[in-house]
Length: 528
Ligand code: NOJ
Image 1: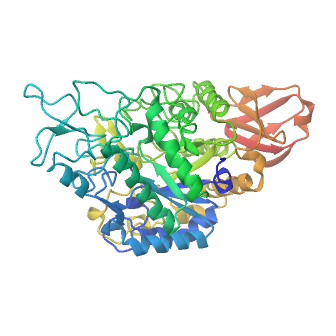
Image 2 (image 1 turned 90 degrees about the vertical axis):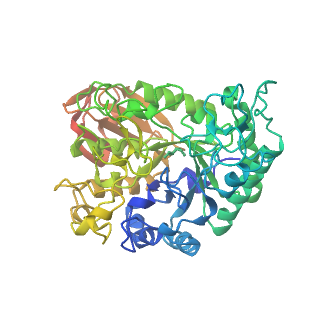
Image 3 (image 1 turned 90 degrees about the horizontal axis):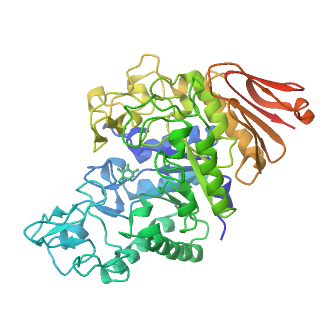
């Protein structure tokens, strides 16, 4: 079954709920805060919002350590607030997607507490010590149960047991995927999904989607699991969408997902197609920004090849029924505006994102050019390794020039994370008042994309030039030119039909009879 039409037409927006808008003055964003800004999101033109986990959690990993899948964490409000938010988003023409964390729970989840005290329970993966030692990666049991459990990410996130693809006689914790524990967990997964879909949410972003079945060559067991979920979803909630955090659409879509995110890691190019596009640095280090030029490099030292190959590979494998999601950033990696990247470099990036046949996902604040703020404290597990600090991408949304940038009425010292201290930090209010702002540009580009299906995933793509500038045709009807580098670029061409193209939206690109001239950091969308 193909993806629901609303998804194929979607412009996604990701909200990190801690940092979007604080309605009750406790320094942490909440669901009512989101509700208060739906007019803004509708004005911007986004059609679907994905929020990071908002469920009861000890917040060791910013909510990715869930203690109750069925209850909103009190710091965000309550279940009624979520139900209201679903209705309010719909009333604004926006769909709401939640974050599903199937691979692990918090160590405080009652399932785990029970499991840690009952050796007959197999919802988690337990090993007994052999020769006085636990097998590698296993963490000592916090309960009366002897031995240890397998974590999925941080040590305090015990992996739910979905079984192993391969069994070994001397490793009895490798249960088959149809053992009792895995079956119970698969059933629980559906119950959770059914609960929230029943409330009217439109689907899920699925955390660590490839991590469920362990020691799973080629992800065959994990794919079987998700295809089963998808078959159930198609039957029971055909309008719901499943978006995976997998980082390899060519695997994730055949495994049952409607769409998969390109990420800074993974993928056919192995180096992470997103990193090669607009972020540099390795998957584990934001420190290395600038050492490995990406295509959206001001010096024009990068190549779009890695990204295009990853996209073409994915497209040829998944074809019509699935999509690749192209995020500006997310809560785990660098914002578009990180390190040396300046605001003038952002328009061509958005022009590319919103005219490419991938599904665009805008990370909150990127639409005004919020920057990655360096040097912030470790907050709720945001520092993954020396130099890999996610806090900088998680700072409060900058609404206006008022107290705490309009994010919260709390004293500045009690905010979830500090507001960007830069006196020139951009704000929504400032940019709404300025017709030439990035925000207005992003709004216009969204409107153009939504008005012309040829610019969406259904329209054909013909790459005319894959250097600087990048030139491509969409749906045979739109010419797009993107010059992310800081020098004028001239592209000779021999296609007379281009010269008569009319501008739809452009900054500093001139299309003439035999050549296209693109000023520094420019883009152009032209109708043939
Ligand atoms: C991916 C999430 O995006 C990240 O924030 C989290 O820390 C890990 N998965 C673990 O759930």
